Length: 107
Image: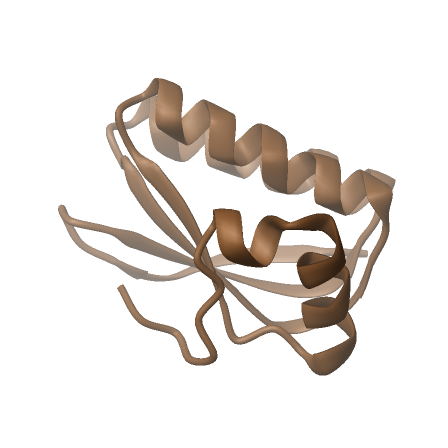
């Protein structure tokens, strides 16, 4: 199960810390949280992936959809601090480059 927590928030950006598996149920949980943030005016979101232990195609799809939703709201979604296994998935899918994967959590 994926746990999504807002670990840092300011008017400029919000950091969401994810832990667990970014699979079908985790993807829906992440998108629900992102939608809620965007609806409340948070436009720039950094996903801290330190605690993500698994990411499948549902997770990749959720990241693409989250990016599209943030862009549509004149915002940005960025990724940070993924494990080597998750980094590999993000690199193979092209998301590491598209979303600007950082090795540490930075706003």
